[in-house]
Length: 115
Length: 109
Image (cartoon, rainbow over all chains, first blue to last red):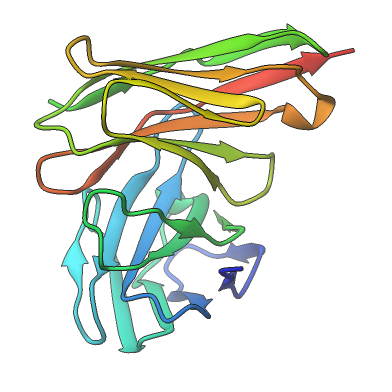
């Protein structure tokens, strides 16, 4: 079974803090993704990566950055946390071989509260 | 713009059948996914449709009509554990996934 592990289930941070969200997958997947999930909205893509050291902006990259130094690990960084970044953050991974049937495997999520 | 519409919430009775609809308007189409997400848990893959018609997988079936921009997920013999949110997502012409907001399904005894 594919396992995608997010380092924290719950985080509480203060406005202006730098926040790191870590994600590790154990299936040697090339693709990794960071989403945020808010009530009443579909998953919104923040950043994704198709390979080590590669990153692409998603739909809502402002206020975020990412790092992928190793294939299995994809980190999301909030440079200066703000209250509107309070959300559920989901990490996902997928195999690169089929662009269309690109089944994504998700972590359990990190619920971040910024006070 | 790109849009995925599905009902916000549905209620059904244990043992019954429920159909969750999804309509989409996207720039191109390369397949439609259904995922299940229990409260506080990760979304998990249920089904993928790229051709018109019905795909059956046990108690769950998924239907696609590309000409109508429409899909549904059919759940039979409902069990309490089926209480969850069901997410519809479409792969567009750039192979990006566009997600619906999800349908929360409540199963009553």
